[in-house]
Length: 190
Image 1 (cartoon, rainbow, N blue to C red):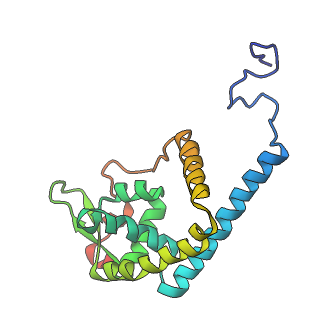
Image 2: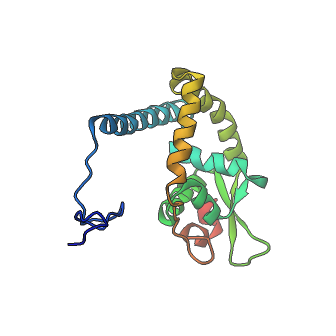
Image 3: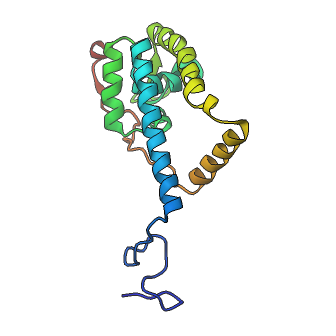
């Protein structure tokens, strides 16, 4: 067994599995569990209301938001996967479902014959334009209005601090950046 500079078991690093577990104290445990519970309940509620009011799943909404904010309403699949923090397989399957519903389509990339874009269709634009105001109102009702301005500032600072300490999410991506969805025949995705 290793010992650190103080002669204690373990090498002392935060990722040292040989060190004794550093259990959360009651204050830390309450904060952690409260965060998890809030996130789970809030996302479940927002997702259910979004589905009920617009027919879009929360995953549909994530894709539509990222595409609607991109120039020309289109992104390469690896860009969309990175923005959504989704693995290639999840992205491919979800884009196939959305394409069958007419919300997105494949567009060839003129600068890369092997590449393509995921592009919003007119139906996709209509869907996000109808859903966004409803979703923002839900976020305001269930999240923003529950907090004071100081609490919002504190939560922003907390989020920034935690995110700064995390490694960026690595998204699995093939060398061409396209994935299975882009290899389907055009008539199977439109």
